[in-house]
Length: 290
Ligand SMILES: O=S([O-])[O-]
Image (tube, rainbow, N blue to C red; front, side, top):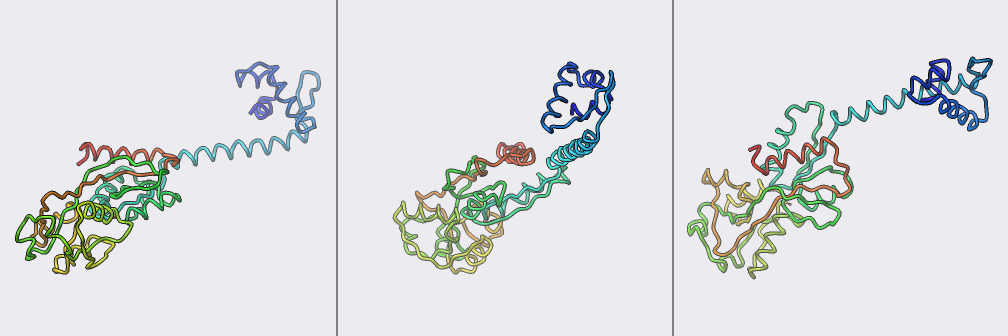
């Protein structure tokens, strides 16, 4: 900058004035540059400065570097308003909440591109660890200490059956009635599956696998067809229950409570856009946005 300013102003005193520094500091800086390149950049004839051929050459590079720097600054500033955010959600969150969250987030941000992915908790965790996702909202447990988990909303799983199932007719069942029942379950790696298995095991209930599906829609159709029962998020089945296509069966003394979490790598750089997304999730959590 000092070299450029001396070239533009034509002398060191004017450059010092423009840069608000002392004139000896300007001559020292130019002297150091000449020492560094081991060549004269200016001839000092009388009280006048004349740029040398070497000085001209350096000036070309200096202007190029300064312009490149300005371009880089502008491009980096633009990124904050014109960026891509990659969001992963586990199946319940992805099915029931993510579309609304993305819609709310997109409002007023035409230059921010959101790419979303719905999969099970384990896969979301793996993708966060290798930076294939910026952030996730998940329903299962995170196992890596590298991932930060911020509580989001709470949820519960409920037992569902088809409406003419003997359990549905009873409305409430005892734990022992579930023994050896055929269940349609989510795949390994799913938070829903993990919670289901651990609660069933903690009550000593055996169950049989009637089907393993990686999405809630397929499970609901299979249960409605009477091919098994399942334990799923209340959020996922509420519509079908209201339409009398599925029944929720209460289980005495057994609860499947859980918490959704916002998750990201602990070393992830939280860009302003990412921060806005986290803020939006907080607003949803605290009911500021319904
Ligand atoms: O999609 S889940 O249940 O992690």
